[in-house]
Structures are given as structure tokens and as C-alpha cells.
Image 1 (cartoon, rainbow over the protein chains, first blue to last red):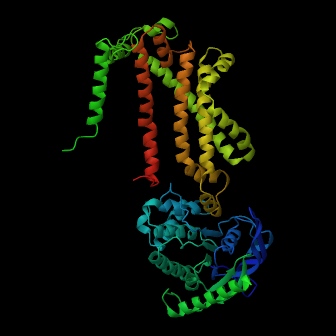
Image 2 (image 1 turned 135 degrees about the horizontal axis):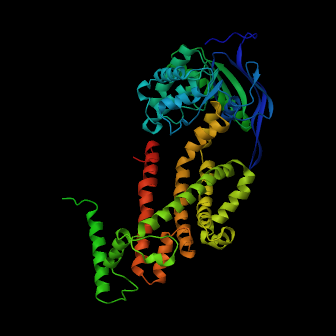
Length: 265
Length: 271
């Protein structure tokens, strides 16, 4: 499904303007995000990377509409983001599959809530996406019968199936072993190139960020803010052990250390 | 060679029963106070199969033959109806407690208190409010079931992983859909164990009610047990006790255990 080009040349899918988010914690008021302004372009794979506590998960919660900012605005196209919606589906750190449903039913869950489809179309779509993530033969399997990587694949299919405008990923690879993770990097890139999705991924893994992102946004903590933006022009599919990728990752790491050191002084 | 698992327990049970039989027959205890197992078995036979007219209500009928099954039926019916009412009120009420803070702070707290109250304590009030009628017994059973169910449902709904809710909400689920498709299925194992506890409480309160009150509308197991006491028929008292245990075990074996096993297995909580 193609999206009409909007008037702005950058064609932003998501627009954040001066977004600030605070929490009332036991230790008083904590500013999780301060004055974030960011555009996510249509069809772009944007990765937000930073150490833990830099507010990147909070940012994703705001984009998903699961949390609300204290200041600033977030827009999806021309619409303000005020609540969760199926135009922005989320892949969580844990797979969040429902254990009482099998793989196919899990993928159907979101589709059933999408109006304007017949049941046959929903079923066809669910099967298509399960096949896309390589689990066409696991329709009937319950989540506990699948490996961690397979579960995350089902979760990916579940998020893709209702065809959201933006796919949000909250460290979905961090709980997986290295081998499974690399496989999934390949799958995600393939799907991204094939389906031309807009994707926002948050992660603390700089290598992962550089491997997957068109742009990598470096966050620093206390309070969470944008430090630097890196363009990644490497051809896809990218491999984790590509030297060019390693070089770029080193560059991001150096930048992060410099920012953290500057903060300490 | 490996013995089947049931052999040793059966052997031990037979040895204990044999020892008991010998102990009573040898005259070490008064067999009016402690009847021998063979006596109890005899009573069973008489109470089960030697059917004479069973008329509910009249006290002396407790000594009629063949009244065990009708009495069990009376008790089971009370139990099932009372339990069903208790669960039917308790499940939505528990869900409401989990959902609305002020309901939790009022009814939830009250439930916690009332759960610790043995439901026999309701008998005097029930008798005054409903009279010596079936409703009085049902009321006591409902009071025994209800609060355990409320608390179990409240806890299991509150313990539904927030991640499920977040995932469902992003996919556009909310309101009744969220409750019926996510919260309730996720809470089901907890709800089921709450029901099981409610069933146990219902059983206890019903026995108490039947022992303390003779209800003219039906002669249950508790009444039978109490009649045995008044007529100094300890074989009847012990026989009824055995039936009460058997029914409890049977309910677990036939209803709760398979349901729980299915639930645990289908979610991979058990191999």
C-alpha cells in the first residue's frame, strides 16, 4: 500500500516537536525526556540508541500513545498522537504473545480488530505474514512450544499483519541469543526492503543500530535528549561482521563516550 | 520388577483398616463410640440400597433405610446452586474490585474481612432473615463462596501482566473486547483456583449449616450426620463423614483437576 506524498519535502511520518516527559518517582521528579524534536520520514528505518535510562523506551511509549508527554506535540502525518492506535503497532522486548492463543490466532488478534475486512481476508493475511516470517508451518503452535526467536517472529507477524503506518520496536532482540538475533536482523531487513515500512527501533546495542538503521539517533541520559544523528549509507542487506559497519559503530560509540564524559564534568 | 504405584498405598490402607477392626473387636474401645470398619460398611449397604420410604423433613426418618443417596442429592443440589450463585456474583464483583479503586477500597477490603469469618457465623442471621427454609441454607453457602471468589478474581485480574494490556491496546483492543479477550483469559488460571477455593468453602459452610439447622425442605448429609449423633449411631456419623470426603475428592477429580491440568498444559506451565 503506498502512502501519498505529503507537502513537506521530507515527508515525515512521525513528527516530534519539543517533547518533554517527566515522572514522579520516589526520588522526586525525574525528567525522562527533554525537548525532543525529531522527524521520522516515511519509509525510513530510524534507530534510537543510547544507554539504559536515556528515555528511549519512554519515547517509544509516547509514539505508541501508551504514555502522554508533558510538553510538546507528537503527530502521525497530520494527526496528533493521543492514544494507542493500530496505525502504530509495537513489538515489545518480550514477545507479549497471548499464551491462550496459538500462533495463527495471535496474528489474527490485531487483524480481527481491523474493520473493513472479511474473515477470509483476515485469515489469508495472517497466513501470509506467518509465512513471511518463516513460520507458515507453525500455525497451530502455542507460544510456549516455540523458541524465543520464533516467538519474536510471530510477534513481528502480528505487528505487521494489520499493515500499520509505523512499526515501533522496543528492544525486541535484546532477550535473544546472538545467533537468533542475527537471523532476525536479516529477516527484518528483508521485510523492510520488501514492504517499505516505516520503522522506529530503540536499542542499547550500537552495532544493532548501525546494522538496521537508515539513520541512527544517539540519545544521552539524565535527562534523555538527542545528542547526535548519524546517517548510515551502507547497502542492504547488511551483515553484522561487515568492517564498514564495525567502523561506523565505533564512531557512534566514541561519540557516546564523549557525551557521557562531558556530562560528568 | 516394579510394583504398580497403587499397590503399597492399598496395602497400607488395608493394614490400617484391619488393625482398626481387630482393635474394636478385641474390645479395647467401646464399639458404640468407635464402630469397626465392617460396621460402617454395613451401614453403607443399608443406607444405600435397602431403600424404604424416604420422606424428607421428619426427624426420625434419619433412621430409615436407603436414605443416603437422596440425602447426598439434597446436599449436592444446595451446594451446586449456592456455589453457582456465589460465583455468578463473585466473578463480576471481583473484576469490578480490580478495575475501580474505590470499589476495591470498600468491597475488596470488606471481602478480605468477611473471608476470614467462618460462614457458620451467618447461620443465626440467615435463620432470622429467611426462616427455617431452603433460602437460609443457600444464603450461608453463598456467603461462604462469594468472598473467596471475589478476592481470587480481584487478585488474578490485578496480576495480569501489563505487557498483555499494552500489546492489546496498541492493536486497538479496549473496553469489553479487552476484558473478554485479554484480561479474562489471562486471569483464568487464578480465577479457577479461586473457584476451587470457593467450592471448598461452600462445602464447609453447607455442612455447618446442615448440622446446626434442621431444614424442613430437605434432609441433607449434614442433617444425617447430626441425626446419627443424636441417635448415638457412630457408624452413621462416620459413614456420612466418609461420603462428605468422597464427594469433595470426586468434585476435584472430575471437575477441577482436569480443568486445571488442561489450562496449565495448553499454556505450557506443565509438561
